[in-house]
Image (cartoon, rainbow, N blue to C red; front, side, top):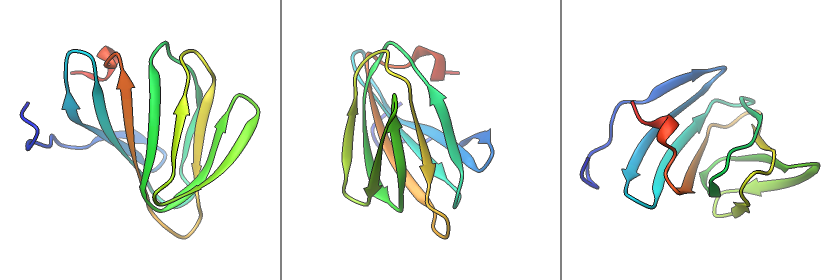
Length: 108
């Protein structure tokens, strides 16, 4: 995939979808779109992750601490910590997630 190619969205259910927009040897970037009020449930993985709010906003929870996020905000999720996101009601949200190393489980 070149940096200009954008594959089709992968529906995850519950008003959440994602697509890989950059997939390198040591880094992966993924757009994650949330319908208003949609939830990315608590989970963990061994990858380090940053999340940047492109538009919209919501509540990002890491372990037991909640952070209110809006467009332009970024958060770092260390490897192995439980985390999740709840989009605000009334507006769509787009997140840009960056993973290192890449999420092989996201590749088709």
